[in-house]
Image (tube, each protein chain N blue to C red):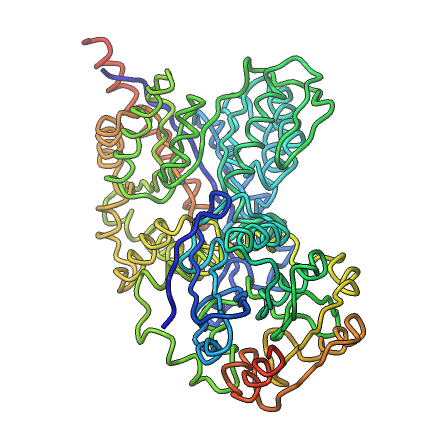
Length: 387
Length: 252
């Protein structure tokens, strides 16, 4: 059955001025000294990135997406709710997605409050996703990776209770105690803003989404794996009496559109290469702090790391991940067929990577909005009419 | 020569290796298990030597509810009951030394003699203990002994996935205990309750728990016999046969 597609513009807001000798450091996460952060350059980047997301709203994207990372050049959004708050008065129509803050890295009442404030300020445009956070976040925060999953579940329960039950309520748990859980304000959307779990498809995170009937925002998984985890979630959610809808399964995709295939590659590939080679570069130790993964998962990852060799290969990476680069026709075709194949109606498009300059981002945002989105929307409308 | 036994200790699978007969000598291992317990083999002529794996380490099972060193104190009370040991000689290495001293300060009547090998647990801002959670495992291994040969022969030539997984599991157990609170400010306060004969051995080149901590132990457990071995690192009992002999002699 055809579905109207939804299009997000996601931004990582990287600090795009890596020190020249950054490869002398073992990681650009956790330990790369913040002496390399120049606030003047940071200011210019914030201005620019916010303008890009505001443009996405003006161009008709359905949502803008921000997320959270710490101690890294990869992202300047250590506290994404601040970014979302800056976007609220500057955007009119787009949903604002904070995808998101690990609920166990923050006091749960405080996160419930901040999200509710954003939802009320934006007149119900907020969507949230709950990640466990990468391993790197645990080296930067005073929270144990070994008890993270347990704490995550408890914090999530408190946040939902804060949003849905008339306060004051109580919570006496393992990690948190609330004698008067009664946050003001409550969210605008009832029972609460749309929620997703973020993950790489581990059974633990799939189960949380299934239990609550939440969406699942998968990150950095291959096409095959993503399809498999969508299937797993649908099945597992059924066990809990939930039906997962196509819009609850966003496809994270890297997109670049240009006039010709050749030009698209020429303009985009160097930045994607920088993203994979330089901006996500870290160590196995930082990726998997003690207790963060089950031993089985650690072994799977260690075995995978053994097999990875050679450098960045655009063709190879485009085959296994959701990367759509080329003419509007080609990009629309790829996204449309992925959505159908995945049973999803939700395209979460990363429109800027690494050190991509402003002009390319604006070009990409504009061409996508004017040449790709209408194609897919028209196609879906025709199919729906035919059905 | 060690006999392997698998016990159920209050619901936790606990594997114990033991040898010999006589008075019990229980060895509490440190934050890893690659160093082994074979150094106790010669003691089996005179003692019943017992080497349990702590929950979350080596051949023993996991218990995610163990989040505090005190859970291990309770575990050993239970284990000694299961083994029908009224009193034991307790030998603890590093984290195991911390645990042995804590056990003894709380349940001294169950301990006959106490031996601490480079024990952790002391807070000394001038000489901080190595944060083993922050240092990659392959680097820690190189810091364990001054004479690397004593540990090298216990390592696989090329670590396979099972070895990597086993080390990751043990570091996860350590994280569960110490990630958020690496030290317990109350530990030192109660050390004066250790009344039993106590021997502390240390290598003066210890790169994990600085030998300077011996000065604090001397203040807090004044009756302890403290011996420092020159040219030895953290695994002083493996590097210096005379250190292992001193322990055996002290226990006799």
